[in-house]
Image (cartoon, rainbow, N blue to C red; front, top):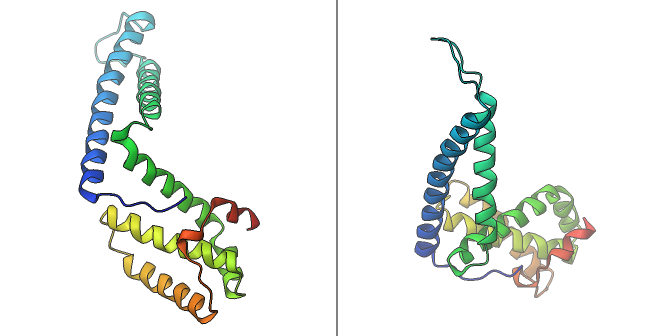
Length: 174
C-alpha cells in the first residue's frame, strides 16, 4: 500500500457526514424494524407494569438494521465520496496487521534486516500520517522518535530504502 495525499478538511467533512448519516439511519431503521417484528410476532396482551417480552424482537431489529446499513456502506466503499475514508480504513487495518507482528519486526530490525526496516519505516510514517489526519497528537511525539531512530539506522547502514518500498507481502516473513 502506498501513501497518498489526502486533504484533511475534505476527509474530516466526509467522515463526519458518513458517521452522522450512518447513526441516523441505524436509529431509524432499528425502530422501524423492531416495531415491524413486534407487530408480526410480538406479544399482544401485556399486563400493566409488566415487561412486554419483546426484547429479542427489538434486538433482532437492531441487528437487521445494522446489517442493512453496513451492507449499504460496504457497497458504496469505492464511490468517489468514500475514497479517502476507505483508504484510511484500509491503512488502519494494515497498521493492525503490522502491530500484531511488531515485536518480531523490531527484533529483526535490530539485526539490520532490510525488510524489517522498510516495514518499520512505512509503519511509523503512515502512523504519523493517520494521527495527523485524525488530530491524534497525544502520542505523536513517540511516533516521531521511533521514525527518527529508524531513519538514522537506515542512514547508518547506507541504505536507500523507506516507506515507499513497502508492500504487504513483506509481512509474511514475520
